[in-house]
Length: 413
Ligand code: 0X9
Ligand code: ZN
Image (cartoon, rainbow, N blue to C red):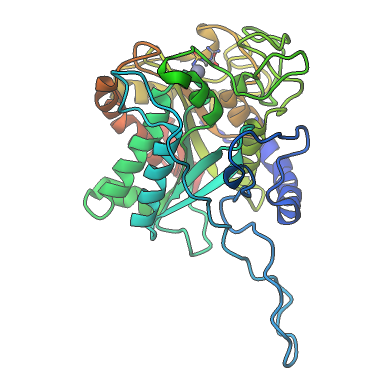
């Protein structure tokens, strides 16, 4: 019998309070970049000075209209999120043979166009700004964008590591399946009508841009935030606040490719992810129930934890472990990947996946796409398509993840 109680539920309740504080802070500090770092923009000001537009309606309250009678309500009217700045003109390009991968400018144009074509079910926002001033785009796809309800959520993110360009194509592919399939494909239509699907296309746009600077690859993994010793970059997948820096393949040395950062969430990009995920807590419950962080490579589905080789440590219930394993194994059946605990590959700590599960109670996975780091454009269609059924399955299961180990949906009400 699965219990959704345990570490996840405990943190969900605590985070409900945290989220309320965060929401209040967001209303007055919208557009600032977080408490633990300051940013020196090096991109055009039009980009760098743009405000971070959170998902939902966290903008500052509208000014009260001139009073011509009794005040009817003191509730502030939420304003729409600020408009996104225009997409930049092209500043980088992929090497020959890789031209179908999206540069930052192409990604921007693609997501802006998709959202404009589907305003009823797609909301595009920026959840924050990278160190160099690029937007971190998020899209919510749901038929419930405007009705104030919060259907079960599922999150897919990509691009955490600069060099892993295929992982940016995966959320873009999911966007296409959902937006193009709505009203045409019965499964897609039902999922969009009953879920909130969140896509963060490129968590680390500076890393991706630097990786292709000059039209060649640089094997660049980290973000582009300078360190005190003159080196550049934090490994964003070591910078989350779950067993931060504790163990495994992680480094306290700023020059390392696995640099954990000066403190948990010291990177602007992980701060943006943290704040965005925490904003999805409503009534003390994290509405995102399942998540995948896409990376490359290895055709693997990795369940938590990575920080320990113990299968069920103290911060995981046996029930939650069973759900994680069942979800991962079923996805693996659908895409032909290997499913295993993250630490069976190697131990690491401070990862998004461990934070999603350990601190937010989200059934979360790392999916390592493809068979190599720099796979040519020709693999994009096939490698993304082979994940379609697994992605749709996880979206479905987000409605009641414990169904993965039960025949009855009783535990989800
Ligand atoms: O090391 C990482 O951050 C990820 N792998 S990658 O090759 N994309 O860099 C995640 C690895 C999954 N976690 C563990 N193996 N512990
Ligand atoms: Zn990676």
